[in-house]
Each structure stands twice: as C-alpha cells, then as structure tokens.
Amino acid sequence: MAERERSIHEMLKDTPSMNDSCGAVHTGTEGGSLGMGMGIGIGMGVSGSSSNHSIGTGNPLSMSTSLPLRNHSAPTTPMSTASPHTNNGFLTSADGSSSLIRTSASKIDSLKNWSISTYKCTRQIMLEKLGKSQRTVDSELEAQIEQLRETQRKYLSILRLTHAFSSHFQHVVASQQSLADAFADLAQKNPELQKEFICNSETQRNLTKNGELLLNALNFFISSVNTLCNKTIDDTLLTIRQYETARIEFDAYRMDLENTKPELTQAATSLEETQRSFAHHKDQYEKLRGDVAVKMQFLDENRIKVMHKQLILLHNAIAAYFSGNAMALESTLKQFNIKLKSPNNITGSWLEQ
View (cartoon, rainbow, N blue to C red):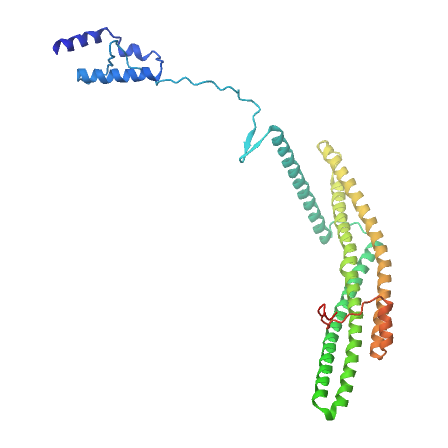
C-alpha cells in the first residue's frame, strides 16, 4: 500500500501545476468531460485524500476550468438589418412608422390651428362685448336674419296653440263617441224612450264623424307647419350660424392684421402668414354671406306658398265644421288631398276587411 501511494505521488510530481493549466483553454466533447469525472472519482477513491488534483485511468490529466463546449451550428439565415419592429405586439415596418409619424404630426398641426383659431375668436367676442373692437356689419342682411328668427318664434307659438286645440278637440270627439254608444245602449233597454235615445245617438255619431274630419285637417296643418319651422327654417338658421362664426373669424384675423407692425424685421414672416389667413377667412365669410342671402330668398318664397295653402285649409275646415256644413268639410279635405282617417278607429282583422 505504501509503495502504491509512493508511485502515485511520483506521478503527480511529473504533472504540470494548476497555475499552468488554468491559463489554457480546454476543448472537447462530453465524453472527455465524462472521462475526467471518472478519473477524479477513481483517484479520490484510491488515494482517500482531499487532494484537488485529478487522476486519469492511465494518463495524467489536469482539471479544466472551462465549461464543456458543444458543437452548435451557425444560423443559416443572416439577420436582416431592415427587420420589422414590434409596436404594442404588432410588427411594423419602417414605412409604417414614418406614416404614423406623419399622421401624428398632421393631427398635432390641426389641434394647434384649432386652438389658435378658438383663442382668437373668443378674444374677438369679448372685445366686441366690451366695445373695444369693431365688428363687420351688414345691416340689410342682419335685419332679414332677425326678422326670420322672429317669424320662427311666432310660427312655433301658432304651432303650439294649434296642437293644444287639436288635443282638446280630440277629447271632445272621443266624448261624443262614448255618448253616442251610451244613447244606443239605452235605446235597447228602454222601449218607451227608444225613439228619443236613437235620435240623440245618431246626432252624436254625425258630430263624431265631422269632428274626425276636422281633426284630420288640424293634423295636416300641424304637420306642415312643424316641417316648415323645425326643418326648413332650421336648415337656413344653421347656415346663418356658420355665417356668424365666419364673420367672427374674419374680424379676429382682420384685427390681427391691423395690429401687426410691418416695420419690424422679425415680423416679416408673421405678416405674410397673417395676410394669408386673413384672405382665406375673408373668402369664406363672403361665400357664406352669399349662401345665406340665397337661402333666405328661397325660404321666403317657400314659406309664403306653404302658409297660404295651410291657412286656407284651416279656415275652410273650421268654418264648415262649426256651421254644420258636412259637405263643404268633406270637399275641403278632398281639395287638399287629405286622407279621411279617424284617430279613434281601430283597424279590423283581415276577415272584416
């Protein structure tokens, strides 16, 4: 045993030191690493000592400080420099990012222009209310606009009163219908007063029929005036509001142009931009002013024609009803092509039809 340990120590003396082997780079396969591990296990088992030296099966080996390397193949496809980028989980190319930047820039410019225009318009409105700025006035056109708004207010008042009258009169017609049914029922149960009950029932039924004709005329009048006030006139008033906004913008940029001092060299570019903005808003203001004048002219002609027809209808229908002239009432509704339909009638089944 002592001779074996002595031969081992003599073999260890011939091996290079650990300092010499640490600087070397060792390569190999997993089999070589496994062989070294087996050599270390055999050496430790044989010597029984805590030496850090490794012992092979027959050849001296040194402990490698590097990890065992594997043979990895190089990537077959080279990475492209123009590979797509990832944006929130989506692949985007360089062209997509540039278009996104352009879109964002245009939105920012639009927001900037809107903010500047809103500030200038608000300032112009405040200065006009304080009397510190002059406003562009078209006396003739503004008088027509004010007259149109007053006309709409009066027509809406007529519309509200006519609707209330129609609602109340509909209750009257419903009461007359109920009264006619009650008289007819009593005529069956009271033979001694059957003639009188039947006479009153027929009278109430005739009144109900004529009342329904008048209700049709009233509903036609309400529908036509409602269309005139809430659609036709409103469409013109919308253009008028756009014209008033354009007038405020025109005055705001006109005031900026008047307040710009052209003698300052640093204000040369600003003066050119202000002049361009002023010319643009002036053209827009003049265009909308012409549109308002044309629309108001057509509206006035249409209003006169519609109201002429509706006022004749309302007069003839009410006069015929309260004078008891049922034939004149029916001819009035036929003259204006009004369908004779009762609001109290319920459409029967297809068997009854």
